[in-house]
Image (cartoon, rainbow, N blue to C red; front, side):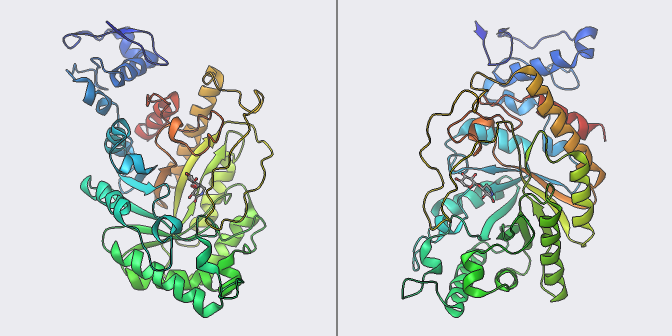
Amino acid sequence: MTVVGCCVEPVPVLSSPPKFATDSMRNDRRVFTKSLTAGVAGVWVTSDRWTSLGLVPAVAAAQTVALKDVVPKGWLIGVAINQNQSDGRDAVAVELVSRQFNAITPENLLKFQSLHPEPDRFTFDAQDRYVAFGLDRGMAVIGHTLVWHSQTPGWVWSGTDGGLADRATMLERMHTHIATVVGRYKGKIRGWDVVNEALNEDGTLRDSPWRRGIGDDYIAKAFEFAREADPEAELYYNDYNLATKPAKRAGAIRIIKELQQHGIRIDAVGEQGHWRLQSPTTTEIDEAITELRATGVKVMITELDVNLLPTVAAPRPALSTGTPQRRSLEPASPAANPYVNGLPDDVQQALARYYADAFRVFLRHRDAITRVTFWGVSDGDSWLNRGRMNHPLLWDRQRHPKPAFDEVTRVLMAR
Ligand code: XIL
């Protein structure tokens, strides 16, 4: 009998633990990696110290080195999980997440439209299971996100005349939402992305319905309401392109400083980290972290993935009024979707190098960084597929660790 994975040679299933580990194997990292990968596929594997282990297939995946065991003390290493995962249906992912990570973020469940679809109706069932998933495993449970212009139902901003609600009404709705949700998970959710994506690319405040209805202080109000609902929870400002766009980063720094000047609690700033091989460079990542940490708040990489596909002109989604994010898509052209049959080795290696370089920068700032979270478990789970075949994460579609996983763990272990 043989086990055939996507990226490994057929490997014979052994009926007893291998007694060998030759010198050449010991020195050959690829052989080592292959044996780990084969382990995930359900055969005997050798541990990183080359002690022979007998494993049943179901727990074989648990024997690879775990990210959470090799990050600096005090760091959280997290992953965004979807409802199939927090509900336990995706058992392979559940095992991988439990073994590798010490923090979780809900990919969609704690967004306004999931939690509070109508003024007088909150939905908490799946959300409670998500929180329990993390607490049962001793993980830090992250809340994402309270105030955002996207994935928020239209009623939140609507006035009686069909126009925008007035300031008092919108503030009242924001308060009810935050008090109810943050209050429910008081002492259970470690920290909240209180405000998400409030900035334009030039660093000015986005013309979000929240801002139009309440005014610029909607950000401060959201942080105050969150503090009031759970004084112990950490509170974060989260946005993208803070590493690639200095002007946008300056906007984030302005937001942080204004909160601080008003004595309003903010614990950390999150750069989402939706990156590409070409951008940001390590220099840009380093500059961004250096500037953000100078505000005195902690820095987190909150939604890390590396998009490998070419940029294609896509129709802009309408400003969300609760409409689903996924649009029906034309089949992508081969040029727009080059990796349908897998990732060529040179790109696989480039991805591994990019992740390794990024983590080297994170380690240089290890005292300012408190969490690095990947946006999805494996390539097949990623939001970046959207009708194409992307490969942005550390595990492939078969949930086998990629060279990028090996490189990241190598960098973390060598520190
Ligand atoms: C994405 C989810 O991954 C998708 O499943 C959903 O359809 C749209 O939102 N920035 C954020 C995240 O803060 O909430 C987004 O998540 C990705 C971009």
